[in-house]
Amino acid sequence: MRQIFNDNIVQDIKEKIQSAGLKATPQRIAIYDIMLNMGHVSADMVIERLRQSYPSLTRATVYNVLESFEKSGLIVKRYSPSNKMFFDINTYDHVHLYDKQESTYRDYSDISLIELVRDYLKDKHIPGFDVEKVEVQLIGRSVAVAE
Ligand SMILES: [Zn+2]
Image 1: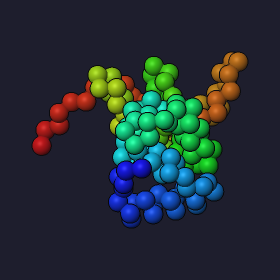
Image 2 (image 1 turned 60 degrees about the horizontal axis):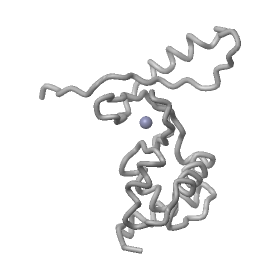
Image 3 (image 1 turned 120 degrees about the horizontal axis):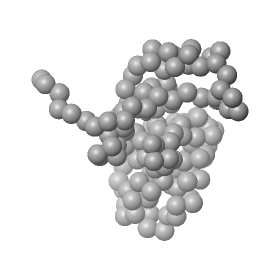
Image 4 (image 1 turned 45 degrees about the vertical axis):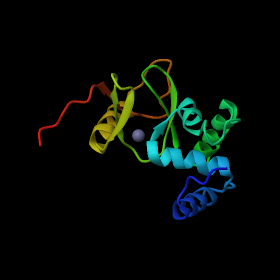
């Protein structure tokens, strides 16, 4: 394997993975590193990024690694407007800004907005549906900000 990481970063990632109760395999380290760099990834994006260093890596393997991260609380699973599954390194509550032109996500911290929706739904009964989780995603496009 090509040495692509800075040793300190590798050590930090190893500790993070191990503290979640998982074995720090080279694949897990590589995938967590991608998560750190990209924030939000789909299994396909990970494969694309790792094609050079791990040509034999299958979608199933990547998916299993991401699932193991999710089960141990290292990352969270989310769904895009097109219903594609993606994984998020930020496990705290935040709003997503989805840029439909770029197909990218940006995190936006607005806990009041999430709480507003949660409070609204708390005593509300939606016939035939149990709400387990509330996620807020705003869809639009990125625009230049005046300096
Ligand atoms: Zn996010």
